[in-house]
Amino acid sequence: MGLIISELLEGSENNNEPSKVIVCHSVAQWKDQFNSSIVSKKLMVIDFSAAWCGPCRYMEPILKKYAAKFNDVKFVTIDVDELTEVAQQFEVTAMPTFVLIKDGKEVDKLVGADKKELKKKIKEHDV
Image 1 (spheres, helix red, strand yellow):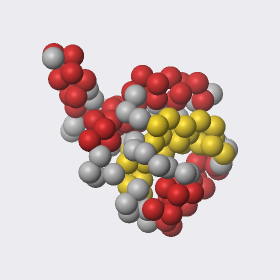
Image 2 (cartoon, one colour):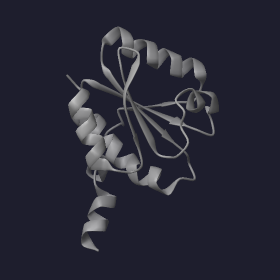
Image 3 (cartoon, rainbow, N blue to C red):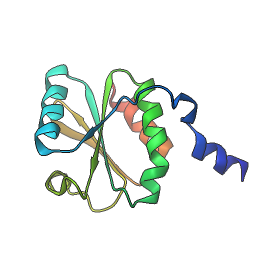
Image 4 (cartoon, rainbow, N blue to C red):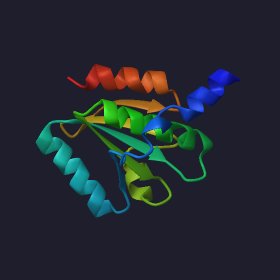
């Protein structure tokens, strides 16, 4: 049980720092973030989540921790209920879904709250 509690608290030690995860609330904001990632040549990790999704809430502090650790990666969160058209564009059918974009193209995708696999994919594509 201690392991589960420690996993839930992971990343919470930096709660005083502002999050480096960008939350998009409009299609225009999403397009700006997408275009800036192409120009910067940075890997972008899109977190498709929903307010009602328990596994998404579990991944939220982990994503914040990864955003603080991987400085050359852009992290963006999109609520599927708020930006339905963007979720449909990436064929999101379950949450959380993480889509990795490089040079404007999808290079990888992860469905589910698997923090180790997400970290592995970020390291693999952050070159």
